[in-house]
Each structure stands twice: as C-alpha cells, then as structure tokens.
View (cartoon, rainbow, N blue to C red):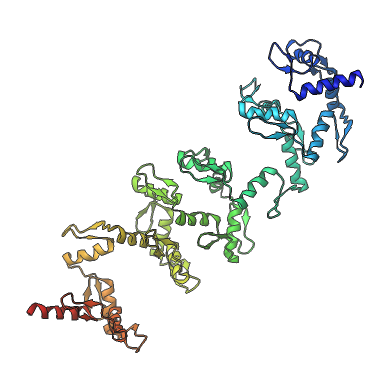
Length: 551
C-alpha cells in the first residue's frame, strides 16, 4: 500500500469514527483534517481568498473556485453511468447516483429520517433546533436556508431573473418558471396512482389524493372542523373571527374571500361575460353558467353520501349536508343564535336592527330582504312564477315549490334524533320534538292554557272570543276551524272521500271510517276498568260506565 493510500485510509477511518480533532476557535466547528480547518478559517479572517474574475465572488479554496467558475461556463465534466446526466461536481454526481440506488446514508439522530447527502441532513436538523442562520438585512426575517433568503430578498428588490422564452413572463424562482412553462406545454408529470388524473405540480397531486384518502390534516382549534387544504382552514377561521380582509373600493363592502369580492364588483359594472348557448342568458361568473346549464340538461352532479340526494349546485350540497351533521357555523354576535346558512344569519340580524330597506311601491309595505319584496309583489300581480314539473301546480314563492315537490318525491330530510321519525319540513320536526320535551311555548292570556303550536292557540282563543272566521258560501253558517267548514260543505256537495276498502261504504270524515272499519276487524280499543268489557266506540264505553254508577 502506497503512502497516499494509507493517508486516505486513515482519513476514511476518522470519518467513520466521526473523530473531528480540529476545532475552529471562533465558531467551534470541527473538522477531520487540519487543512479543512485552515480553509474554513478564511471565512472568518478573509485571508487568502480565491476571487472569480468573471463576477468577483470570493471563495475559500481553489477547488471551490473551480466549481464556481463552472456555473459561468456551464461545464459539467461528471456523467452518471446509469442515465447519462452530466453534473458540475463529483459530490453532485455522488448525490445524484443515490436517486437511482435509493441509498440514504445520512440519518437524523432525532427523528430517524434519512437523506442522500449530508447537506440536506444539516438543513433538516434545523427543523428540530429551530436554527435560522440566514437573516434578511432589510426586514430582519430569518431563514433556515441561504437559498430561501436569496428568494425572499427578491420581494424587496423586485428581481425576477427567470424568464419564460415562450411568452416572456418573469419569475423570482426557477420552480415557478418550470410550473408556468407547463401551461404552454400542457405537461402534467405528476399522476395519481389511484384514478390516473395528472397534475402539473406535485403539491396539487398531494391535495388531490386527499379526495381518495379522506385525509383532512388541517383542524380548526375553535370548532374542531377539519379541512384538506390549509387555505380552506384560513378562510373558515374568518367565520369565527369575523375578519373580512377584502374590501370593495366602490361601496366599501367587505368579504371573507377575494373571489367573493371579484363577484361582488361585477354587480357595480354589470359585466356578464359568460353566455348560455342554449337560451342566451348571461352570467357574471363561469361557475354560474355551468350550474345554469344543468337546468337544461337535468344533470345533478353533486350527491349526498348520507342520503344519496343529488343537487345541481355544489353549494346546495354543502348546505344540505348540514341537515345530517347539525352544523351551524354562522353565529349571531348579538344573541348567540346559530345558523347553517349565512343568508339566514343576515336575515336574523335584521330582527335585532328592525331594518326594512325594501319598500313596496304599490301598498307601501316594507321588507328586510329584496327577495321578500319581489315575492310580495306577486300577491298584487297574481303571478305564480314557480311551477311544479310533475303536476303543474304553481306557487308565488320558490320555497313553497321546494316543499310541495316533497309530496311527489316522498323526501323527508328532517329526522328526529330521539325516535327517528322523519319530516318534509323543518318546522314539522320542531313541533314534533315538543312531544318528547313536553314543551308548550304558546300560552292563552285569558285562561292560561298552553299549546305546542301557535295555530292551536289561535284556534283555542276563538272559544273565548266566539270568532268564527270561516263561512259557508252556500248556507252562510260559520265555523271557528277551516277543517270544520270543509267537512260541513260535504253536506251540500254530498262528497264522501273516505272509502272502506272491505265493503266499499263511503264517509265524509276520516274518523267515522276508522270506527266503521272496527266492524270488519272486530277491534274494540275502549275498555271498562270496572268489568273489563270492551267497545268499538268511546261513546259506547261512556254509556256503559253510567250503568255501573247507577248500580
């Protein structure tokens, strides 16, 4: 073995033992060889530096200068024997070869993560130590890597050294240029191994994969809701903080997200650049045009994974899902009441302010919302613009049509969490729940009797007032209930809409049919608690009980 080989072997042994006997007395850094320490000290002393005669940059060693000059000349003398790629330094080649071999010899002694080169390990360790040695001399911000500082400084200088040779656009980072160029080339090198969809950026693929995995790594520390993207969490938190950083410079209105501001500004300009090629209707946003076209095609691409209901708009699905989750993210800062839809919160707040800015020019009545004024005017005109496509029935309000359609679909989206019973109306569920809670919030101010529904209180009060607002237009007889008038009219019309499916006999009311059917079934639901005899009708039981009292 030659002398030089022995020296190399000793150096390798020192490296393997991590023996670094040569220490810098200025910064404390250690080295395996004295000459490395000597070169390192030039950083502190500035002595014997090697200068580039092209750009003037100084380096501490002749080898470093040789490497640096290659950045100007473009020389890459080291070639990969596997893929043929050329590199400017031997260390770069060693690192590159590890991409093929998968070798990662440099392990973090804190978390165990491995790296293909020592430099990447050193940078990684700063995550654990919090070390940020590179400081911006303009704003003072610190960075863990020198390259991050270089990129950051371009914010201050406005320097954009990377230029697209297709359209001429400039960028502050080479990675941004690479991404931009893919807009021209259409290249999407990052493919999803689950569904095959491709993306131009790796970060977009990472976000996309969360659709398949269901991963939502960003959590709201206020309400616990989770999101697949950090930007969604930031926007969501504004609901809690009330922060609306995007302001309209025309009317001063503020918004949670920039896209909402852009949409809003089009209300001032009246611009509607997106036109439907079927009916000619124009829209201010492309998404509105896409949703609109679904009305022509009948397509409902957004499906609820709980009840399988489908929707034309994604927003409709988001709001619908809150029926199942019970989520009410919009809170009134006056009374604390919560709502599942922001529009409902806006409506609610007007109950506190009493504001009614929309006035009917026919009768003078005022409304808190423009939509209510529009619907109100339909009462004057008699217009019913909302038509059922099943039975052709028409309605003044869109909400009435939505509720009506549930008769045809059988849809009952509101579920009781106590007994599981379902309802087609939210108000029906609210009333039903009072059976379980025993709540009777409507009180008669005359006799004190309480009721679970306001309509029942209204009907009850007619006992005290004698009011009978429902009149028969044939004989003039009056009634306190609408249903009583309906039943009475059948005397005149002879209508008997309730039929026995056993013998065919008909009745004008549902209750007599129920009693009649007991003849066929033999059912006797009314029992005497004295002698246990049973009866089909309650009045028969009442008459029978009297026979015991006479005894």
